[in-house]
Length: 202
Image (tube, rainbow, N blue to C red; front, side):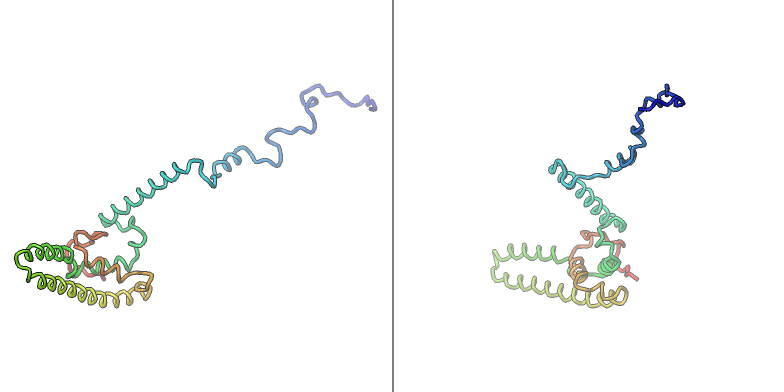
């Protein structure tokens, strides 16, 4: 090594630092601490550590969502109902069915009453069993006719207002309408928006 008389020997801290050493915050190729913490928070394991706990938590969230949707259907809060119940043509179907008098609305209580009455009457008068069954079948035919007439008129209104998509196979509008028509008004969900019949949708 050649001695240089004009070179000053460093006596401070800078002279004692290795030239190749860099400050921790100045190291290249590594993220800053804030960025590293953000990346760690965003990391999600593909397989949860505790599958049972994760499944239990998932079921709990699902129950809470279903309870909120059920409460919304009981209260008539359309904004928080299931997506299928918020479709505009389904809202129209509900309002249309709720506005008319449906013979099938009383099908379940009438059928139950006829069944019980036939069991009691036929014990003493067995010959009355056939008329009782014919009465129940006559009521069932009347319900079917009423539903067909209802859907015939409702289908035209749906097509005119919302197009063919409202009555397509995937929409299930027909089954949705008749299933609501054979339910008692007070048991229907979502709850009817009008307390009385006759309030036809526009």
